[in-house]
Structures are given as C-alpha cells and as structure tokens.
Length: 76
Image 1 (tube, helix red, strand yellow):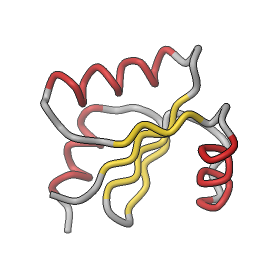
Image 2 (cartoon, rainbow, N blue to C red):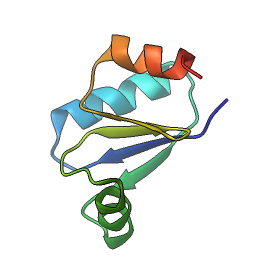
Image 3 (cartoon, rainbow, N blue to C red):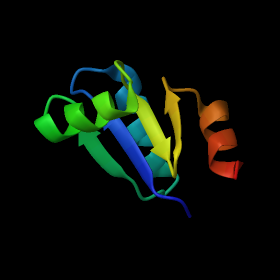
C-alpha cells in the first residue's frame, strides 16, 4: 500500500469527511494540518493552496470526492 497523507485545516467540513472515510475504511494515513508550519510548508511545496488535499504515493488529489480517491488508490 502506498503512503497516504491527508492535508487538512481545523474548520474544513470536507477535510472531516475525508478523514472519516479513511478511518472507516481502516486506511493508514498521516494527517498534516496546514495551520502548523510543517503542514503549510509541505502543501506549498506541492503547489497547492486549498484543502483537503490527499497525497497517495507521488500522486496528489485536491478536494474530496470518494470515487476519485478510490480511483487514485487503484492507479499505479
């Protein structure tokens, strides 16, 4: 399984949806809050300005869409 990183902010409802989905599916992931310096730095390095953002291996998805995320998980 490729490593999953979820970039979030505290008040983002879509971030909470993504987090809930990952937890319900039992997927291991690292949560990175963009309000913290490390999270903001990582997200900036990816050239992304909004959350939620998910990084699966070396692929990145911005926004939360279950079908797109499941496709991302299946892609090589």
